[in-house]
Amino acid sequence: MKKLFEFLLLLFPVLVCAQQVLAQSSPLDYAWKYVGNAGFSAGEADYTSLAFSPSDGYPYVAFQDYGNFGKATVMKFDGSNWMKVGNAGFSAGSSQYIRIAFNLSGEPYVAYEDVANSFKTSVKKFNGTNWVYVGSIGFSTAVADFISLCFNQFDEPYVAYRDRGNSAKATVMKFDGTNWVNVGKVGFSADTAVGISLAFDPYYSLPYVAYTDYGNSQKATVMKFDGNNWVNVGNAGFSEGYANFVSLAFSPIDGQPYVAYSDGGNSERATVMKFDGTNWVNLGNAGFSLGESRFTSLAFSPVDGAPNLAFSSEGNYGQASVMKFNGIAWVYIGNAGFSTARANYTSLAFSPSGRPYVAYQDYENSYSCKASVMKDDSVLVGINDQQESRLSLYPNPTSEYVTIRISAPVTSLLTISNLSGRHLITRPITEPKTQLDVTNLPSGVYFVRLTSEKTVGTGKFIKQ
Image 1 (cartoon, rainbow, N blue to C red):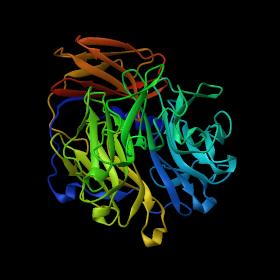
Image 2 (cartoon, rainbow, N blue to C red; image 1 turned 45 degrees about the horizontal axis):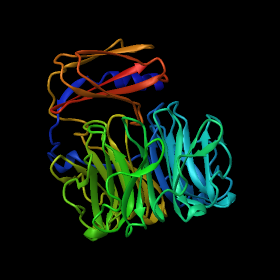
Image 3 (cartoon, rainbow, N blue to C red; image 1 turned 180 degrees about the vertical axis):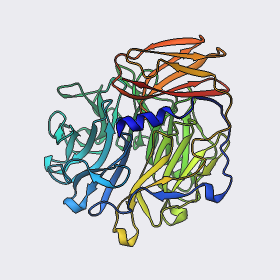
Image 4 (tube, rainbow, N blue to C red; image 1 turned 60 degrees about the horizontal axis):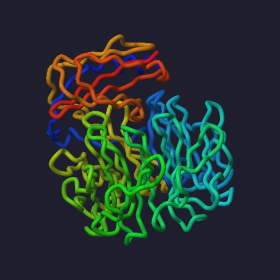
């Protein structure tokens, strides 16, 4: 199956595309459909977290499983059905603030607040047979919540959380291969930090955290670790009003951090801001959603690099919505409020082909607050107005080096990403031919993206 999947990926053409607005041609072109059965979890599912495996390309969902005493469970969709990954309810006791992420080898990691271990943070990974602890059980010094999990480009897992042992401020730790160690100062935020979201910049792989900052009127703040200290990115408390459900992601095009949140300065509607290198500025209109937004989840399309936002929309009875910034304004992908009932814990991720998926707690009566996943089944996903191909990759497959050739040299930003969208190599290029050493990359499928001022070139190669 894996070889077939990789072969099908190679059948897609390598194209250079002008950055055009993707227009909806008819309502039939956009249809959100369930992935497998709706309400597939054994019982109520809280803290749903969605990610795609870089090894098999399938969607995985982690959640607090009330069909298994509130313990952590992970399920994956194998193309036909949702199936358990290892044992259901694999945590020692009840788990909260669950997050899933993959390492470069395709092993799923889950971080959670471990109720059985004094509400501290624990991380487990699936080794192909069992869920095993990564480092010590309950490694945080005290109660930890609002947990966020992410890998840097060196394949090291990091967790960020609200640290009740340090005045409820933000703390970040990483696993060094043996132990979980602090990244800079513990409790580095000015005051209490909630809604913490962790991400790495694509250039230097520095950790950034975004959060609701109680030291700045509950507005949004972003800080980064510069190698020595945690420092503010732009002004602290940059949002117009209080910010809830903060979600941080980096643009694959300009490499800048973007933050989405429920905007108290705009009737709790959704707002997205980006850092322009100096200041935080609105992306499109502030408060662009139809009504109040909850559980905002920000992600960038691997096809056109556009920011997409999933959220529970109170303007649509709490149903799930996804909006995309088309370069001018925020527009809905498909219908606003496409889920059949209220959707909590919305989590957005893109498939390797660039299709948006949303996992959520499904309030449909017959689903009893179980987990559901829907995807945009639009016939237009991934299609832009395309120019003649001017990018080639060879040899493909390769085991050591891959050469990237463009017909007309122009200063471009080169990005190599894995199937989960993690940037592994980022560098500017100006030559018509560039050779990259990929010896140290694990075997798998990788995306190549060349971004200039006017064009985006994309391709794929297989590392054997």
